[in-house]
Image 1 (cartoon, helix red, strand yellow):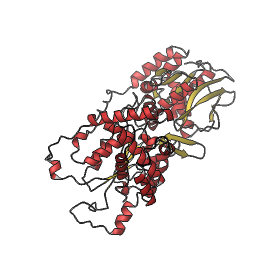
Image 2 (image 1 turned 135 degrees about the vertical axis):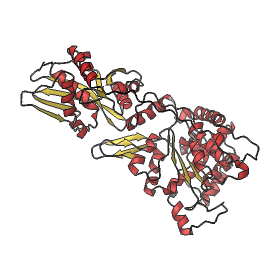
Image 3 (image 1 turned 60 degrees about the horizontal axis):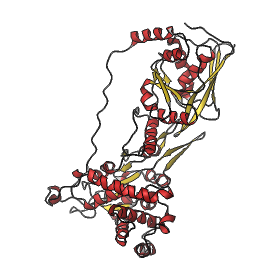
Image 4 (image 1 turned 60 degrees about the vertical axis):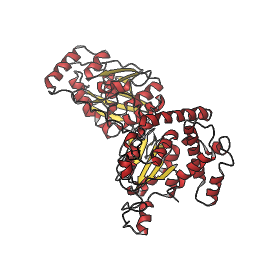
Length: 523
């Protein structure tokens, strides 16, 4: 057993505190005093950090380097920044054992892992954004649990080390090599039997070839994918609204490197699974209509976690049976749809999460689903219809670029009587990629990539399609059927239609079609 105890010893190590996706390097200072045995952690620790004292004592003992029977004080600096989570465990134990003279901690190393009572290093969430923050702050050497190594190595410039047990870290930083042998022997005696769990198999991406009929629905889906536009589909049950929405990610292009890193960081912070590679495909989130506000927008006790809208960042958020959602939950989408960011305020900190997503809403025409275009009689009263569809507030619908009615599929279409084979996702994705390339080339000078993000000032002046083309929009605004925001969104869709057609400027026909897709549901 190592008993190198330095009275009044002092040492420091480093870890990372996450507030949203923003990481802050934290100095972990450890002081060994002469007073009676005690272990105190200061610097705004949460309960998980405070509980680390018992994990650290037990882990250090199992690693062969028990903590000194003295007063141990640990300060997490800056003291005004809240510290949440169990990932500070290894940084604290390394600082304490360095203060005892057992190890020496390099000044450029960041530790980010949880300790088990037996000294094992356990994976934690948020490794990717934490390592990214450490590298950007000038601390390239990072130590994580072995299960998190692949995720940490996704960050360019990171010098990643990993360990399965605390004794391995102690030996690597100058402790007695016999610690490793003793710890290995102890783990071998207590290791449970059984093999490694099998990784889940991937699921196939739904293909557009499965969708029969729905010519307008397929066209709207292609327009939405090409320009990054939001979409509302209204139609009777079984018309194919959900099928169309589920196939939108399949025609979207792969994520760019920066977007992929950001998306993977959000999912790493969520902690549902250990990330071993960058997420390259646009994510798809389809929460149930009973979802709560924190689950959708993010939040929860302690450190706020990203919600469904952040997990859908650079992908698709699909709300099926949208009028069944709580109206307050739906209206909470309005600000992220405009800013692309969701802000979660707490008493001691404010967390920001990215939320650039494509919103797809699906709704029945009424509660029973039979209103408008079905042979069955609608059983809803006029008041019930207004109350049902009224949950989709005007300000929310005004932010949705494409709105269309999805009719019921006929037997003739379902049986293939039209004689045409439905186009598959690959063919549509190729056109979408070509249209997006045209947008990026045209908009690069203004810092935009998609038509859906073009500022209104550009559309009114530099990118205006011409006075003749916007005459129908002027008439719609005069009739109060189109708002100023709607005017801009129609022009954005018109530019997407032009890009899909290979035109250099939207024609009057493009503007007319864009106006049709904007007002066909609300008129």
